[in-house]
Image 1 (cartoon, rainbow, N blue to C red):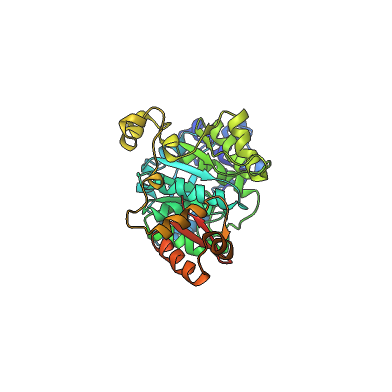
Image 2 (image 1 turned 90 degrees about the horizontal axis):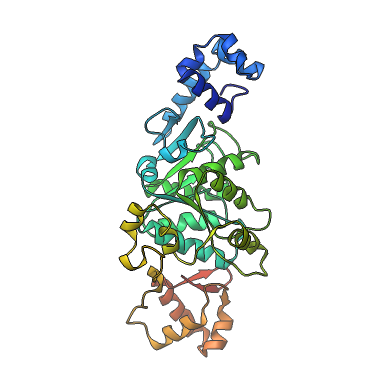
Length: 368
């Protein structure tokens, strides 16, 4: 809360004086020698933010399951502490400790994602979360929301890193998703004080936490100037693994991911094993069968055999439904030869088996 002190200045102060107590006990002349901004020196010397900080802590702890972690606290996430400019304080809510002590991976991508991108994000997050990996993302529309939902589908943990205060949810229509993340053992995390609104300059700061909390970052779809590319640059600076899902070369949403694979050294991802194979050996060993530990090859859970009791009609219909593009019910009726009434019943059965998903406008896609 000290004016003129961001993460880098705070790190310099802690390095020089050893602790927050040491900073606030320093002489004014010692602070001035560090070339801090005058308002920062004045505020530290006068200790004029102590009452405000005490009120903030009190308000945070009135929120169920919320707390504030500080950089020199043993509970602060170890991986995040390693980045060049870790946030001095981290506001957390929910089951943050078990979520962040598990292996974590970030999943980011376009807000205006395609059906293909959404399906891939859900499938990768679901497959990794079902194997004990915490999925980190930013609660944004599109790929972020798909990643959170994939983890929740698997009964796994997911952490949303906010660009607002922990008492704010942005976008507002993701309030229900945020509540579900907390309810199902996940967490919300931010560096911003209570009441911080979703202003644009907050989100690059948010992105470095997404990459900093995990072993790596998966980019599912990203346009040429996407914020997801900022996250991958930060991940590379933090010495994290960068993974990218290839996309259609004619799609603007695939420019970023294809560029990362072609020119930036990102690892191409087709299935969850491609990610797990790059984890530290002791983590990968718990996830991968022996024959795919080195290369991450093999079938994902969604490539296993279809249920044996599917009817011929259900099997035939599944062949007509793509995971990449939505098919309207009228087009499916024409290509399958089924009347719409009969087709609706078969589609409902496939939905109940979690094999297809209905989109708005009576369109259907196959789940990966």
